Image 1 (cartoon, rainbow, N blue to C red):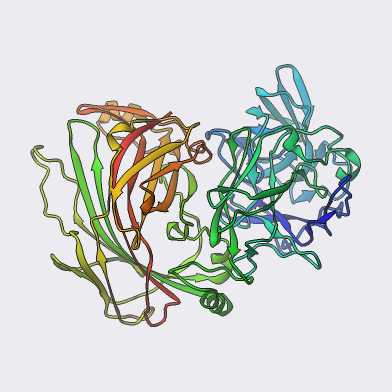
Image 2 (image 1 turned 30 degrees about the horizontal axis):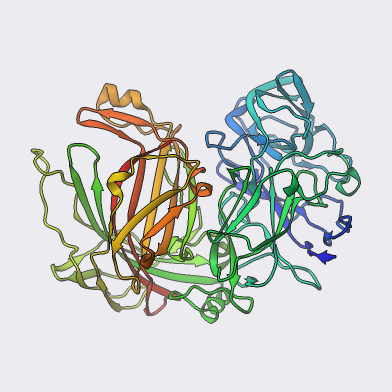
Length: 619
């Protein structure tokens, strides 16, 4: 019998308070789950609130209604617009809106779960089958519930009733829609994951509470699929607990590799609708932000991360920082980071043989609160080699970055000097510096100026005079010509359910990774293009972007279907000069991080990218 040790984990949801403010609601996991012969259970059956003392919930002045697209997975928060985003049978989901339930926060405190709470009830009807959902918590602005496994699959109607009012919204019920709970309650960044310990309380996985390479971890999620038994009662008595791998094809990828071992994948013993996967990572997978994704019968979850150390409890990033440096920074309560970057992208416009170059230099100096940084996804430089990470976004901004508070650090005047002279970067805001050398240009088209390339192979030096946030420094490295994408012309249509293989030649494997990224966007307003001759931004736009790093010496890399399946299908846009899609694929070199020292920084890194981009159609 193997004790998995689950005590101390909070399954966190998001509570909407004032506009733009989200606050966590937690289920505290009890003393542990024993997996063995008959799945002996010793878990707490209670639901408790944590960290909500002093929480003020405000009634919305908006008209009572369910928000359009306001029915989402209770862990990933993935928009219904994305592939695989329906509500899975037996999963927890959230309904966002206004005046959906009585004032204040009410929660399920004991079993059996009820179909009414806070004056609200939810029914889901699909194809003549109607089920009463089991309530988890309610506030006026959002309601969480469990969709019974007895629900029928397909497109139907969710009906929410409150205070004599009836609200309806379309809903799609699916067999599987895995969503991993995350520590930032946004469905991104570090996963809600515990490290197995044979004795004592198992810690929640953190940068300084990392898994070791031979240790088991436990991922917490919802949406693996339906189960038999009464989901309203104590899971230990309901017959809902059991390994679901005999029924469903459940895969867990950690750092781009299948888990070396999965001990259990199924319902937890603590909470109705909450799943868990106990696993051991593949050999050699280490890092502070190792990507984690689950697929069930090919349907992917949101991407989260886990910290894995080769030894000890603190992770490290080769070429960036070691465990001692990270411990010191986290212990100070502040993590001060500087990144200087050279970027060159050749964009193949996909019609008429035209292409355009973009060249730029940037420098960012930022101070993060240590607790906020713990909940971030890091950045693409932290990707383990031969792995990928996916971000999703909605709205006209197209911004898939996380909302991590930071303070910009003034470094004074920042310059870059290379074979073609010295340039001074402009400071867009405190701590953010940027300089564009070469604007996109299309040869032979009148009115579009031709400019001379600044970024040619050679040695480049970033220097700063120093300011109130960062002391004076100078750092140099060699910028190479990068790799050559050899099968670019053969790729135009990309089936999202299959792997995508890219090939290249050249490059310096000692200094560079092969870098593969892609983006696909939907929901773009094409009518404005026809009427006004321009692409109209829209709050209905949505999309996803993936980033992969591979060993440059391999010469090829396959982006797996667990990555591509997260992307929405691309749109096709017709213009006077040709037709192109809203999908983009980029292949090139991403330098291995080169560390530099600067006064008042915990970490300084010099990197560069050299890539070729083209439009593709993700189908």
